[in-house]
Image (cartoon, rainbow, N blue to C red; front, side, top):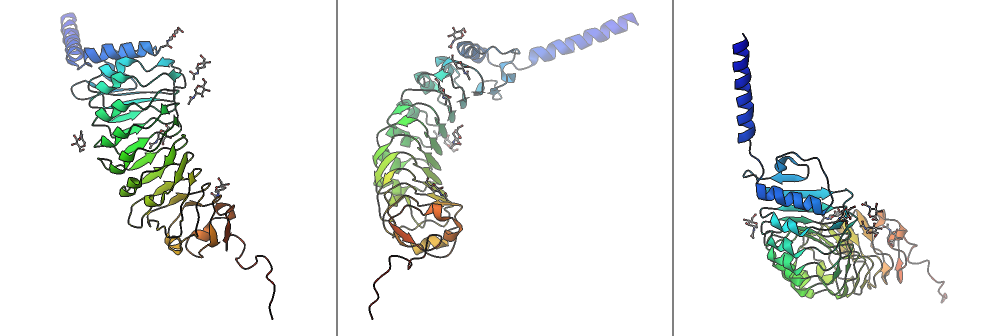
Length: 332
Ligand SMILES: *[C@@H]1O[C@H](CO)[C@@H](O)[C@H](O)[C@H]1NC(C)=O
Ligand SMILES: *[C@@H]1O[C@H](CO)[C@@H](O)[C@H](O)[C@H]1NC(C)=O
Ligand SMILES: *[C@@H]1O[C@H](CO)[C@@H](O)[C@H](O)[C@H]1NC(C)=O
Ligand SMILES: *[C@@H]1O[C@H](CO)[C@@H](O)[C@H](O)[C@H]1NC(C)=O
Ligand SMILES: *[C@@H]1O[C@H](CO)[C@@H](O)[C@H](O)[C@H]1NC(C)=O
Ligand SMILES: *[C@@H]1O[C@H](CO)[C@@H](O)[C@H](O)[C@H]1NC(C)=O
């Protein structure tokens, strides 16, 4: 009886031992690097042996770390340069860490498999790094809600697989790079709102068919009519709160557009009849220099007067009708 139990225990024990030994553990280099990163960020988590099981870490089948995501915790200091020593990393997210300061470290340029870089809502400073254009696998860049300054590197247009570039809510200056009219890849969304970008936008941007373009709250000026086009597949266009100045009378908007915000610019001309054919969810042309009758029909009357106020001489529903203007002298 006793012997049988011992044998059974021994078998169980060996089984347990071999499974735990043969159990794949994360690569020791990656683990050492992760430990350094956590230490540098003053993160003290209770950690299991296998770093692939750690909260915020994912590994591939070869037990190399491919994803690191840290958010919403009380970390302080700079992005540890050691993040560049996770050679198989594809996804890097450091988000909502208000005490994460300093520049985006150049060691990130070593992450040649990086696809996804999400560093939003921190307090990062310095430039949008030029070296990002070397990371040819990048598909998604989101550096929004930081204090990044300087101009936007034109070389980002060389990224062949980029689908979204989000740099909104920073302190970026300068113009939108000329090269953005010839992105190598199929860019789906460009988000540059709430910066201090200035100058006119490159004509070449007319070549692109973004799903979303958000240039709101900058100091951009001149013509932006090239962004529109009846044949495009655009869904969302936000040019609000800039200094754009062009005549909208002949601007054809793609039928796919649902969001069109042009408020606070210096747009002239009258609203084209073609716009009554649109299926709009958000629409705003207030605070411009538009004139003439608002075309009647489609969705244009489903927005209240606030979508049209403060123009030069727009009239017709939802604004007052066009003929109750100044009393004309009557000639008999
Ligand atoms: C950030 O740091 C400041 C000052 O060191 C501290 O008071 C604050 O609690 C920190 N906030 C977060 C979210 O870590
Ligand atoms: C980590 O915490 C220590 C002690 O609170 C502090 O002195 C150090 O500056 C912190 N490190 C970083 C990178 O913020
Ligand atoms: C950046 O830090 C300041 C204080 O230094 C804080 O008030 C602000 O919320 C932080 N920004 C972000 C986006 O967390
Ligand atoms: C880009 O995406 C394609 C298709 O998903 C993939 O085959 C390729 O390896 C990616 N990277 C580069 C640098 O083109
Ligand atoms: C970028 O990150 C911000 C903040 O987390 C988020 O609100 C925004 O939707 C993201 N942008 C894109 C294009 O995913
Ligand atoms: C249009 O924009 C103006 C100015 O920002 C704002 O006051 C108004 O509420 C907006 N109207 C609609 C219908 O979105």
